[in-house]
Image 1 (cartoon, helix red, strand yellow):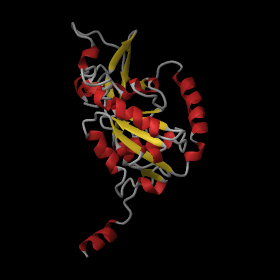
Image 2 (image 1 turned 135 degrees about the vertical axis):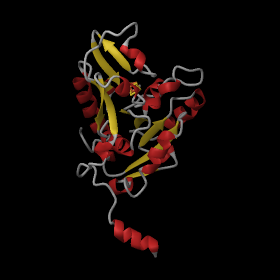
Image 3 (image 1 turned 30 degrees about the horizontal axis):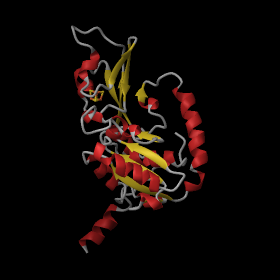
Image 4 (image 1 turned 90 degrees about the horizontal axis):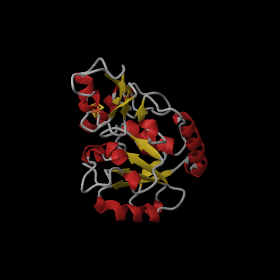
Length: 256
Ligand code: SF4
């Protein structure tokens, strides 16, 4: 009885995203953006601030590679004049280069071409999509966010997105983890068993680049060394909204 009353009191908790923007989604720290140019420091470079090598200085221009950034906030705390948060959850991208902030030259053209190819490939997947999640050496944090997609707040079933236990029923492979050597063969066999067309999503910084643990003796440094990736999701871990964004982007249901 108390549960019924509580349910009636709370009303509908499910997000209206992607039909309408959700203010809650904009509260997540999406990416780190450079605010200034490469400064002259005493004996250190600004790149030393970052534990994962996400900060680059290209000819005096600061860039942050979101595919390596674990969102630890160290650069923002130590140099608020140079780095700041960009809030928001629509962080998934169609190329690895598009994860770099600010964008590298020619990124737009490459993304547009890929978007058209992916849209043609996934046309038949728009209404109902089955996702096979593969943990290829994750620290477990991404799995909590993947699991959250099934709760009443995100409720991916309302969008026709379902998780499946078998790659033979899957349209999308959602891969987390840095690509441990032990998972190389299972990942290859999972891809082989998945019917075509299949879309591969690298979910989280570990999957995109290996994160903190790469290069290492046990990991490949991201899953792109093991299979072709279609959609890249930064974040360590990415928020459920970012994962939702990636799934919708992968199936051509949103264009952004
Ligand atoms: S937030 Fe942390 S990981 Fe990301 S760029 Fe800054 S220092 Fe590097």
